[in-house]
Image (tube, rainbow, N blue to C red; front, top):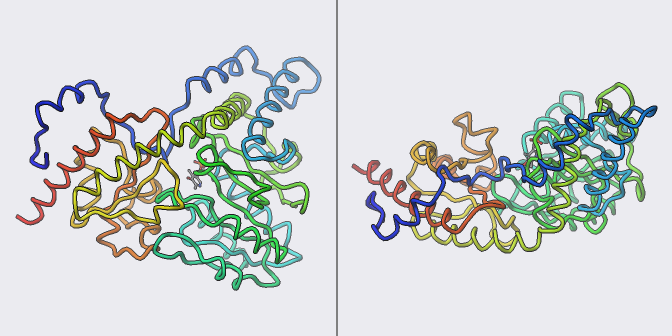
Length: 402
Ligand SMILES: *Cc1c(COP(=O)(O)O)cnc(C)c1O
């Protein structure tokens, strides 16, 4: 190991592996076959428009949508009327932030968010600034968490929204959601959370957690791409939201457009499966993650980014000092699918803004990999990844010092 060769005895298990192996579940997940099966009838046989009230094709589609709405609501402890279907979390983030900003313009124009949010939140908040709104950008500590006291100090009489993600997509760190919601509530400010990485992986309950708006996406929880949901609280308080899409008044006027029935059915089924299997899956996947992390840390010159306590159990983000992350990815790319940070920024050569917010310098941020395990990850894949990454890191370091 570490010399570019596998021990002869180990290669037996390697032959059975299907390459490339997928360790990028924070970018997207495969659709669960049970989800695909549930969706199939709604493409052809049951093709009705859920808004058609005058015939059975429409009723059938509407019934399927309402069952899915119930499945989504149950997973996050919401009521069905509080679920608005969207095209995904990007749209949910936009609708929540722009919708609240517009609807509460008479109260104020100030929003508080965090520098490590997903681009869909950051760029929406930049848009709010261009509209004349004011945004406070909270920093995070070295572990990736915000300081609730800092959040409270940032609240003004004109603050209309606090937007803090549930769990980070690059490092998996879970924010102190309940402390945040208690503060927001105390000051009468709405709390929006982009929970795209958390829903289906950890127990999320909008009432226990005190969340007023929540965005989620099907393709991060073994459902199809292009569908998601926004939770909008109806009681204590009743959240008002300005629609960002005008049209037929679907989704109680909050999101017009013919519903994507097959995808909605898929989202519902994916939520049901997560609800039923979350506890056992988390145990299995977290032991794989811990094994992977332990193996990679043994390489040396390595460190985990973000605090390791309050963290998604399938995610780890590791820096390999002295190794260029892009070179590492390129060398591994054929056999292991993973990412050097968020997929949205890794196209550019900018180091991850999330890792920089933790205090990493450019070099260290550039030397990092995000690894995300999933429903079908295996112990063999983890062992392979440890060996393969280990030898590649050794090779690149060797080259760098020559
Ligand atoms: C993936 C992701 C998004 C974007 O979701 P889409 O459904 O792909 O638009 C937003 N926020 C977070 C935290 C994500 O992980």
